[in-house]
Image (cartoon, rainbow, N blue to C red):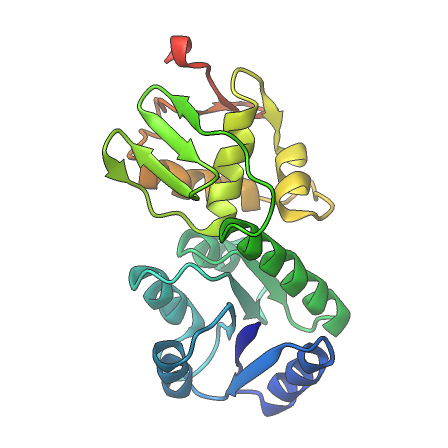
Length: 232
């Protein structure tokens, strides 16, 4: 697995490199945004770990570039800030996860492994389920494709997993806590708005009205629900 690490703090980039190499990952280490962009364009990557505060293009801009150019590999943001706004910004742009500095390197490795497992599943190397069809929405876990009628929807691996999980349980309310723990494989925190941000991004991609959503409906104070087809 090939992982890009961008951080202009040399000590942090070097530390992350050591821990990832200990897990037998190939690491492309960059200290500048320009070098990271060249790496993205010239190497086959399975993940990018991006520091938010770098000179030139910041981590948010690089994350957006990755998604705009159609790369689907997972992106983890590193940030020295803890404001929800920074977290929401990164997730809205297509990041899969974020870690706040200072961080435990072992936690970072665990997050990397979790995201790569999801990416591997997305690329067809794990058990597949049957196609899900709901009122013009088609989710094909075998091909890892999603369509709204004849329009193909480009989803990140984590967005796809969320949609499949909700689709498989259509007709039932899925609590936010359950959705987070099943998709992210981590303990849910009461102040965690990660699920909300990803649901919002999926709705935007589906062309779903957030005030009167057709597909993913919010059950306030509980979680989210995709109705069975007859209810759409």
